[in-house]
Image (cartoon, rainbow, N blue to C red; front, side, top):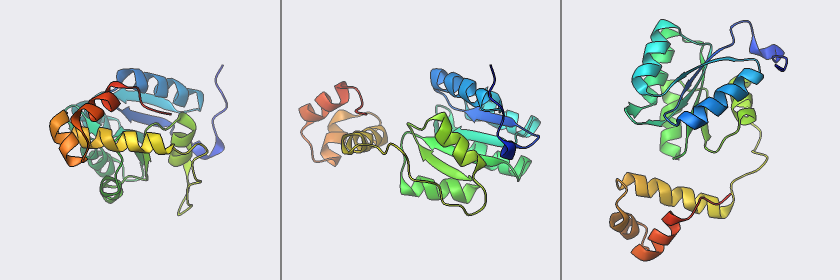
Length: 184
């Protein structure tokens, strides 16, 4: 059973979801469809740009890091194809510099993973200069620490020794942290 679409959604409910995490993008597409959107998914920068040019959507959610490049390339193409498109950049490696870059490229909002469908919907439908509400369940200190370690680990091309050196951490301690699941 489909929920009734929010009034602020408008007539064009097309939504482009660009993320290389196939399981995540399928779940998100299903959740956004229940909220009244008409989602279309892409798993790469190339696929996202192709859809942005051929069928520019009214809304888009774009992952920042994709296997074949940077999601900001998709944001730029969307802005050129459809200037009124509401774009949310979503990433697991959030940083102030990338948030600023995303907004400069034309993103409406920037959310860090894990973001749920309600957060994304609120960001897509936010009007004007309205400040977003603070998250209902902010990340724990352990989760923030884990995210930072993961970001540095990725910056070091998944080199444990280099990551440990940059974090001033013993290599074995870092290996134990990386072997565990992410905290909530």
